[in-house]
Length: 208
Image 1 (cartoon, one colour):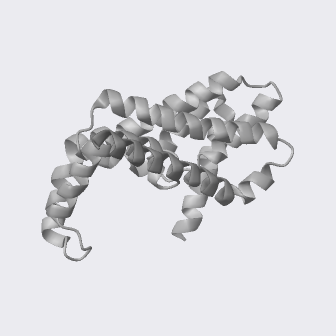
Image 2 (cartoon, helix red, strand yellow):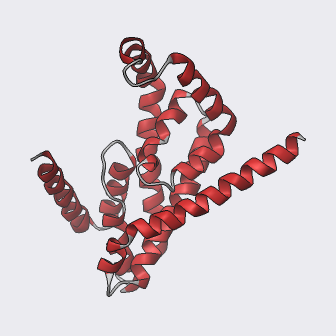
């Protein structure tokens, strides 16, 4: 019942976004990047088709997609920064043992994010599910806002561009992309893994 309602709500949002054009892309990507589980491919693949048909401009769609993603990420960032941490600390003190989470583990997570927050934020934007959540630990650890904006925009820009281009290339067979989104996500995740390993190796050489 809940799944059906969620599906209907998502379809409703998609239809509204479609009717609103460029503004719909911005609003849809803002929703997708915040706490609502909304599929970005439902917005950007059709937008890519419209770009291929010259009914939309590639750079405008790309820019609005990035700005929408950034705004949604900032919503999560500031919620975590100003509201979330005290609530999380309270929940951990009450129910931490149930979920095998302690304040010490959370503090270790903060230390890690302060050291590697830049690359983590960038890569996190390319990974499904994590893409919507990566802004929360960034807010918890009080990541530098300028760096957060830069690396979020860079990571989001790659993902937005991939989906737009996929829509352009497969405009006559969008269902093929939708059916193989998992493969596309795996390819992007492999790319992310290579980038992260390269970062660690470079970082290790600098220290040595």
